[in-house]
Amino acid sequence: MTELLVDGRRIALDQDGYLCELTDWAPAVAMALAQAEGLSLTPAHWAVLDALREFYAEFQLSPATRPLVKYIALKLGPETGNSACLNQLFKGTPAKLAAKLAGLPKPTNCI
Amino acid sequence: MSTLHILTHSPFADSRLASCLRLLSADDGLLLCGDAVYALQNGTRTCEALELMPSSIGLYALQEDVQARALQVPERVQCIDYPQFVALTLQHAKVNSWL
Amino acid sequence: MAQSLLLISRQAPWSGPGAREALDIALAGGAFDLPLALLFLDDGVFQLRKDQQAVLLQQKDLAANLQALPLFGVEELYACQRSLVERGLVADQLGLPVSVLDDDALRALLGRFDQVMTI
Image (cartoon, rainbow over all chains, first blue to last red):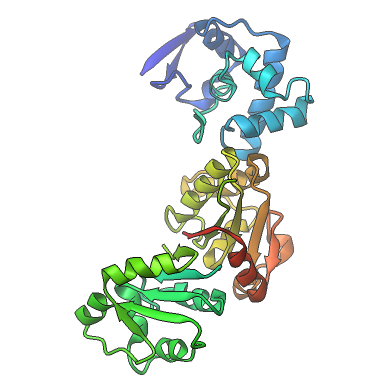
């Protein structure tokens, strides 16, 4: 298990770098996680992360790629909700990386 | 598209057999293994229901499970060994195991 | 063309791993674009009851997960009418949009798929 230090708070991460406690999440945590991935978050990223947190609140699970694309298209429109755009925003692995930055568990059923 | 339904649980403990009997189509097969062979116990309602099934539905029981439990099976039932079990799965378009 | 699969889920939500396993297969199959349908049979129809409180049993919210099925591409959802009636469940107690089928329709449904799996 590793830790992330955010604003003096120690945040526990699992072996894959996902939050151990989903309640630890805060925007500052997302920024720190993104930084560790070499990513700086733009409004387009934030829109996806917000939508993803809504997805989790509603369905209590992390989406695989296809349902993620579908859901984002539904919530943010087809300009963002397509695999090309989401791949580009999240380094080619949107289901895994966006879930990580949004503080969700690692998606299962995902290659 | 005929289906071979495979049951392994006692019909006296749950509803698998009852539900399976309702879902059987005319050209399906029913194979009883493990505790499911207790459905063939003489004088029981389940045995009666199985004997009354249309003759187009194949009714099979795994020989060793029947013998191990000292059951005497009605003529309607065809007792089979494992090679016949395999052959039976190939004779049907699909297999539905009631896990 | 991938083989079509009918998954029959016939266990109550918290009686063991059965309900969760059936759902996981459905979600995985859907995520991989497998043509599949889910049928709730016997005690499986209890999974459909809305307003359940999984958290009281320290369980994951199965009912919430079930809502995600259409997004995972699993849009064919069925329930056995007889199982619902036997258990006193009526339409407005169900939290998922299922097509309710009688025994004849269920037999036709089973015949329509390449593979059937009952959990």
